[in-house]
Image (cartoon, rainbow, N blue to C red; front, side, top):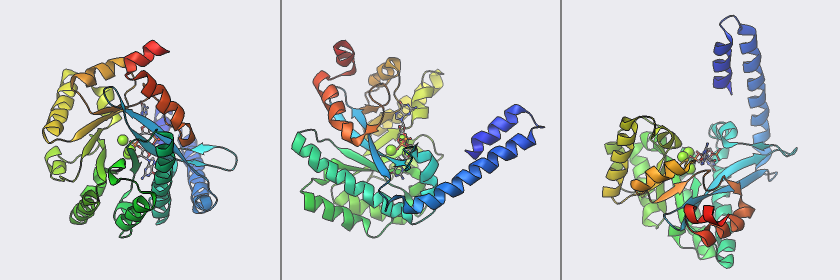
Length: 295
Ligand code: C2E
Ligand code: MG
Ligand code: MG
Ligand code: MG
């Protein structure tokens, strides 16, 4: 993307303006190309769902649904490349309503297979604030006879910082329906913990990868992480650690006893059709240690 190009251009030296502008030009063209194709992507059935495991101390605790865009030539476009584009248009609502609908359809299949678990979807501001959202979800749950607490909605603090009062109302409505609300990417923004915790509709705090990756760098980083986890515990929130990649990180996080762990150590996101396989691997073997012993 443009930031990366700029960074590389700086690295390459100040006189290398030509290189820089060529990179930006290429990435602008790509952006325009993607934008015009995005408009048809939903109608043409090009969105795919991936899913990533969340492990509790011993058991599977959930699955996060992650969007991918598959171009006709087979290329998978990652969310960092198209979500920011989508978020600039009302199209994001249709796409995320589709994600919610598909997630519920999956839950029905998983129920039949006995592999159902709490499932979370990521929502952007336009979708969360959409007046149709609560009713849309309510009808889906009813249609499929799904309990609302199977569904978790992940939002970021940016949404809460926008129209705070409106966000508060919407979250309360969704909470009263029985849905779970998670605050994603916690620790990447700038707002104070105290402020965020005023949103007592939030059940789950998802500690951002960067928190986990920096944990071992300094005692100070570790102390901050510990304080956050303790505070969240004392408010009866669930805590999910994202980006757990090494056994050492897992060990340190376990000392703080998070509610669940999500990361490549357990599983990368997989196409949603592969969930059964992941589910069986991890439910047969239980904890990470047992699984390592298994394989
Ligand atoms: P997120 O919601 O924080 O999702 C977790 C991201 O971290 C995923 O990236 C996942 O692949 C990655 N991840 C998980 N464990 C590890 C790990 O151990 N190491 C590393 N390096 N990465 C890990 P992904 O799938 O590329 O998604 C990126 C972001 O795109 C998501 O971050 C989410 O904010 C957004 N996104 C995905 N689907 C949707 C959607 O339907 N709607 C919206 N608004 N955003 C979405
Ligand atoms: Mg998320
Ligand atoms: Mg996150
Ligand atoms: Mg996120």
